[in-house]
Image 1: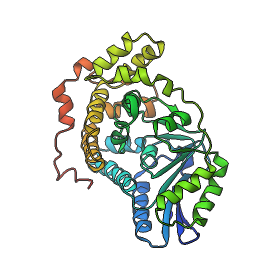
Image 2: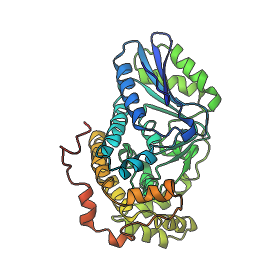
Image 3: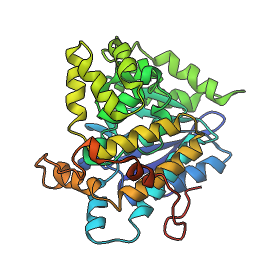
Length: 358
């Protein structure tokens, strides 16, 4: 077990086994995940998974504004500008962590407090147990930087009720704790100050029989009501407008719906990368009938195309580097993104250049 400056790994001594405890400590950049962090996470998860004395793993963040604001896209931009031929490895190794968490054979408990976006969602939403506080701000905002919702979330978003996942994936909307509980993205609400007590109780509990059920019982003792969801109130509008065959039809449905909220959503969609919108929409349609491993392999395929394209790095430039908030998308309109261009993103990869995740 070896901690790194950005992540602390420790074991909490318990009854009939210890907890593996992960603490994100890169708080000065909202715990943005870099390549070193991905590799350290994957290595430590593997070590604890095979260790007989570890009964469960907990991930949390050091006190600050964020659980994790995402992957380090500034790093990705710099690697692209330097023509780094191994840029795809950054994403491949991230997706391997996401897959590892999704398929983890022991309880993996995410204690989520604060901003949780992009890559931060990838290391939490696949947990067996997801506990969050009222400081949670959840989003997959990738279409606003010329990308798409990755880190295994095509699988997750495609399965949310009332097409809410399509809404979140396409618009990049930020939602709160009550919304996440209502949609199933989060299992339990809790006060932040009980996290140490929860960790202690998990360590002190004997996991007899079903390990995950034992964890559930401990969390339920400390959980609180999440409150009413404002997003849930719009579920019928979302279902009506986002259950369409094309992005253009979604925009038209929103514009024609007798609701100011829908008009605002249509306006938001028009600011996103047209390429991102169409690729995201098709990816969610595909992921709805895929197994998880197939969906994240599809995502790696998409990412490998996005990092060779224009919009992703133009989006990072406008939002993160220059911060002018004025990306110039190419093509600039939905009509300019043809079906044949979309399908190129989904075509098989050249394996000598882009090794498989699995």
